[in-house]
Image (cartoon, rainbow, N blue to C red):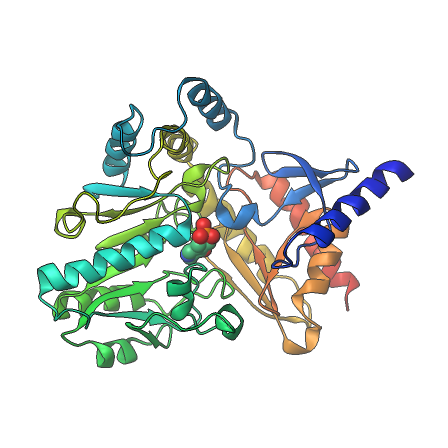
Length: 406
Ligand SMILES: *Cc1c(COP(=O)(O)O)cnc(C)c1O
């Protein structure tokens, strides 16, 4: 099979030679995927334990979503919002009935939805709360990840995300994640919103202390600010609930979704809110050529239907608890902590373990695709359609790697 092996090498060479080097992927060249499995160009099979950062919660190439996509693509794919289309209204209604939020504003990438939330909060601050023009402040947290636009990296505290990309957008204040006292001290008349991830994904599945979101909600109520929750990665079933904020029984003012909303087929994102916030937008204030297009809407409708009808959040809840318990039972001097909710688990290695990358590479050789996040954490986040048997298959490989790397 020398010829196909060359082809994998050649494809990697093409990427390296002609592409921007803004990623450091594992050297597996995926050719085909179905459910929780992917195959490389040489025909090797792997279990996908990253699920495109939760964008394929429904599994790769889900037959129902694919069918919806094909059928819609045969009718109409793009109208721009200059005209109406017959998919958008039904999507709005479906999302509202599912989530309890009155309105939805669709975009494409997650970062655009975060930008939309930032704009909504500022305009709400000026028009509804009565903050003086140009003074609005949004509180965010250390270790946050909300995307890569220049405004969003303005409030990142990850040096690499910012280095060389200034000048930055003002109006944000970074507080220690999980620290309610710091948030209380930072509240003031110009604070229009708190923007928070219920669990920080990119930071390494960092779970804040119990009561943190609830406390933020209370602060927002007391000081008339919006609680805006970024559920782009934590939402849509990942943590064992439709939204991760449900674990704390809060009701945010703005919910930001993306990733699995497109079922792995198409980028679809949105913010959800009630009238008080959403009514700050008037025709021409904000928009996107592709946002809410009929193909996106048809795909999102089916992606959500699959999530609900196949009970993927329930599966994540049940199998996640089992998986966490089994991972915590692994005895290895390299493991510092195993944490997470549902099928969203971070395994943090000790600093002396030599980094998560070599563990991910060892797992890949055994047929399990994981990706390190930052230096020392392995993130386990398989598609939520995974079965107990497939999870056991993965566990055997994880256990074997920790036996072999002594
Ligand atoms: C992925 C992600 C984003 C950005 O989404 P893109 O589609 O990559 O722009 C924002 N917030 C969180 C929490 C994410 O995980």
